Image (cartoon, rainbow, N blue to C red):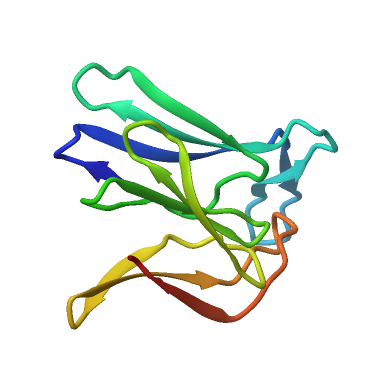
Length: 151
């Protein structure tokens, strides 16, 4: 997410070591061999997420927050200076755009692995996110949309 006024870009990242393998399925009569790849997460405690704020002009990291789970959804930044992202644990979090300090979090029933959105109704601003989890990463799945109003 880009905050043009603050000249910052916010990036959600995954640190989850995996093993990539290349495979080749033998050719069958009249068909070519099929090449494909697969990945398997390594059984390591080294998995986490990183939410990073980068200065658009210098390319320097302004702040970085390490999260318990890899961040596989998206990032939303607001004009009011909040940066939203979610985790597979079911937590939607808001961080201060300038400092990276955690300002708020809301708990959901399944993984928050989709990008949050914002909208306004009758002058009231809301944050919403699909709460669907992710089986590939082992996060609890669900089929809901959660919304919170901003003060």
